Image (tube, rainbow, N blue to C red; front, side, top):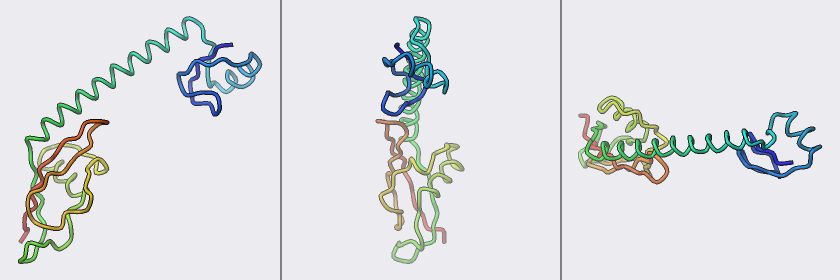
Length: 149
């Protein structure tokens, strides 16, 4: 019997896969636990429509991410931190401070986990900080670190 899976089933297949199983396994396990349904023409059509919708949503999110990347590239934020006379900061600017400054100054909600800093910024100056907006879409935000004093 052909079955369309609604969830991942270990050693059988992933969500939305069409798999061939025995009738007993389908009735006693797959259908009882609502892990799948028989692959009728209606179920196959629903699966096809669902995949098309997911592709459309993914394309829209990618387009949004690209537009946001272009928008971010033209903007900059300022972060103030206390520093000594040699320009070395007391402390550091982390992804959390960059995220907060972007929200306050630009109105952008940036997830601190999407901001890519190899290490916290510990000196005054201007930095290009990469942001991972979407799979394959990276933007660079200009961060200006100034002395608070």
